[in-house]
Length: 319
Ligand code: 8YV
Image 1 (cartoon, protein in one colour):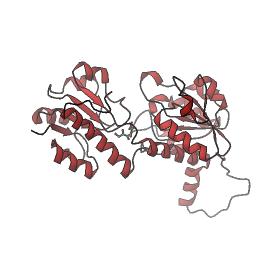
Image 2 (tube, rainbow, N blue to C red):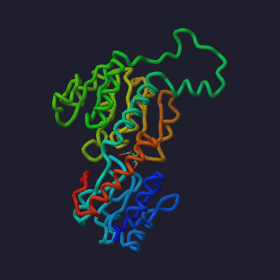
Image 3 (tube, rainbow, N blue to C red):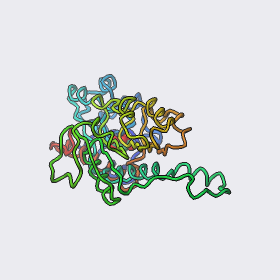
Image 4 (cartoon, rainbow, N blue to C red):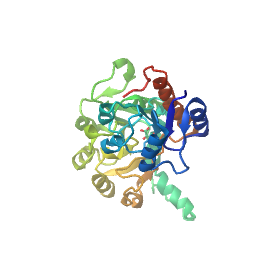
């Protein structure tokens, strides 16, 4: 008998097809299942596994509503702050994520944000769309080079290291802070700084690449933004929870920060619209992994984890 699976959100076509072929899969409506619908679907289908995405919040209360048949929640995301993993485990539910396959896409988007912020992409785009008719003076409306600048990476994990590789090709100096120093063989010239506070005054560009959750909540706040150089650039493709957005808005409005590139927000999708009013912010709607290739790979990786559990073997990405 094929394992019973409920897919909570519409996944790329090839992934949906594989789910149908390999499992007894209940697929979602175009808008995805709401939490109530997901709970009901899991019960009526007798699901052993749920395949979810980052948009499906499974806190302890939600997990408690799942039927006892559910033994796995496979999320198509590297982050898992939307799932209460200890609560899941306490109920005998394993949780898996999809690391690695989105490193390149996420690092690419971080780089797009860095360039977009440094080169005033959002302002220039708006000028063009408004029908540019008045030329700029030679010294007007200038952006900044990335070449030769220092990039600080907070969270030198899999994505941070791929970002560092891209930054090296732009002749940037790389410094990083992590809970623990990397094996020097993996540093490839990046310099370890043993605290965020010590790293901040040295960054021309700061990129957040650390996971969300209580350990990193609002690490960027009034005090830490003040420790950044005047004129620095701030980039976030990690989680909005790492940032006190009031403090960020102040730092951008006062000119303390030159610009920011943001893909993630404290509240999504209803993000703080004051950010959209600032000219020096380059914004994207949480799309760092949103490429055809990467979303396919994420979906397949989640199904690999379901298949492993169904076969009675340890899934590659158990949390
Ligand atoms: C997703 C993400 O956009 O993987 C993550 O942690 O934040 C993103 O890749 C998303 O949540 C898709 O499920």
